[in-house]
Image (cartoon, rainbow, N blue to C red; front, top):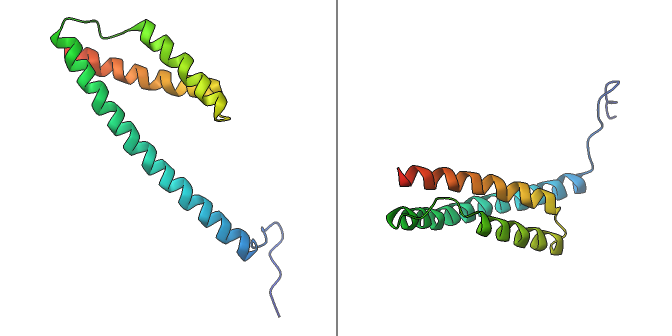
Length: 107
């Protein structure tokens, strides 16, 4: 005899659904780790750009390059079926952090 769930309690999910959820979460965890490592590599490159700019008296910001990158990322996002608005916000967040690093390097 099995006990009935308490009133308002969520019944247990089927075992197959629990396994699939675990599989998907493992994939998400792996992708998150990859994103962190990719961002670390990207910031290593942008740090070198900041050093190069500072050593050569170049401005930290390059609005033309930033606009080109935003356009490029929006196109890539659309092709990948990712919301271009989200992609632009994400890149703007990264650009702001890169500029903060470049300004700190130049001081």
